[in-house]
Image (cartoon, rainbow, N blue to C red; front, side, top):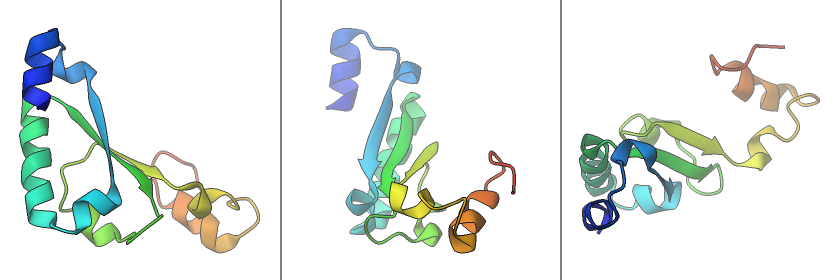
Length: 98
């Protein structure tokens, strides 16, 4: 369906980001990885949305060909007051440790 839509509307795949929830991926990780890899091979960007609302395992994320992970607010809402929440953010190279 994605390939057909890209072709039908003349969309540049590199301008397209598909967001999938973590729940869509964990039930059949191998199948999800295969489909997401095919989409990435087309040039489509892949984002995992709402990470932290379900299974929330970083170990399965490394098996998926994703470009971005959108972390649920519950993980980061107290980063300035809770040391455990702050440790999640400080582990990311995009955020300076505080």
